[in-house]
Image (cartoon, rainbow, N blue to C red; front, side, top):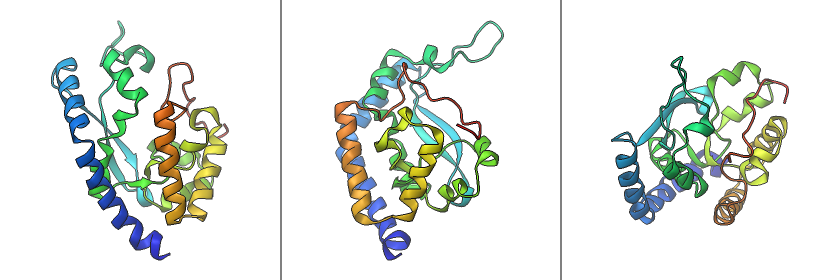
Length: 202
């Protein structure tokens, strides 16, 4: 309980600060590339439910254009991903701005990924427990298959994490995340394996 309620937050803040310093050259390069490509629009903001379902705006690098069809509707995600955005996603660099979310207290380095508010009414009481902790930049489900497993299995892994939160488990998840990013193995959503929306059953 001491780790979960106190030490974890301190590690989040220190880890986010160190990561921002270490990755600042990459951060600045991506900022410049997206500023040029997106004509000044660098970040993507979206409201997500956080700890105890409190709303916050997740921050990501903007990797998709705002292209629309003839009826004014946004084209599918796959058709809107830019060339630079595709490269940034493959390296999971689009997640870097979430370090700011961590410093603000919205997120943790490790925890269940923050999804969409529209899914909340579809959760079972057990699945709702994923909001009993801060959402994470990475999580137990992300290093155990992410898009190759069902939503049901993802939520089972989220609850498994919540039931077993510890310093060692967080370190294990972070190390596995770095390994999978380096190997480009199932950490970010790919064009050939998009994740179906959660409908309460899958």
